[in-house]
Image 1 (cartoon, rainbow, N blue to C red):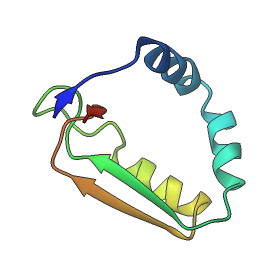
Image 2 (cartoon, one colour):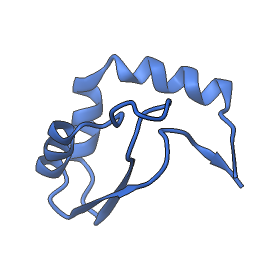
Image 3 (cartoon, rainbow, N blue to C red):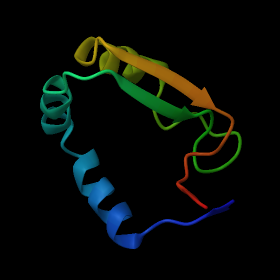
Length: 80
């Protein structure tokens, strides 16, 4: 796998990152079982995860049917 990010997707992600209330409200609308996959480290090896443990608990409170899993990768979107 080689990491590859869409510039358009990265910019949209950055814009949304500064709207946590809107994100939380959308999360509360989800009524289906959900799986959140979380990279074990940030964009650079050794960095903490992009979603810290405290944020996991917040997600769980909004998504009671969720499962959260970690995978041994950096916080990137793989290109297959």
